[in-house]
Image 1 (cartoon, rainbow, N blue to C red):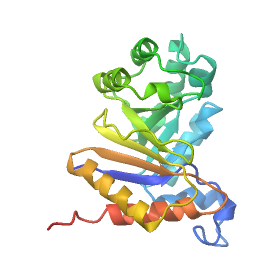
Image 2: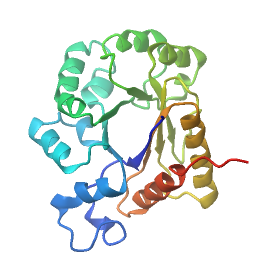
Image 3: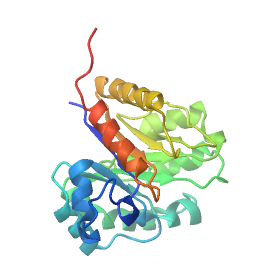
Length: 242
């Protein structure tokens, strides 16, 4: 049975009171409250620093068994080494998130490439060989040259997802390359019609047996979290039949 995971890219926002967090809720209890409303979060902290074991254990303790942490890969891999000669750091990075995996709470790892890194199928293929087999991995390409058949074929060969990122500047082609799907909804506002279209697409994936991870943009306002709650509720309903 395919599973649907919907959340936001972060949770530690006092400005989400009172629309999402209760007015008097302490910040130390934000994650517990969040995980009672949504079933995944995309962690951006790991882009700039390696996850400490104490932090991982705290997150594990504060969330229910079904909750998943999507993890953004460290910038050393994507922006400094730019996927080249990164084996040692990749191994070190995955070691730091192993506690989440052991607890059954690790979602996909997202490799967000810099906008000025152009397509290189050979580089991507070589990098794939450094990644652990059992972990779900998605790639967010931010240069349009990556949206090509040879890149999609490489992702399919390794069962790695194309992250479908939707911003005001660019929309990634919605191409299926793995046995799960990964969406990043980055626009500040979504109409009712747009959200219904999202729900239909999520249903298509689940009907095909694919798990789905979808993340709304975190903002100072709680709008993304509210969208996430609504989409999770709507998409989680049984599929409509004619």
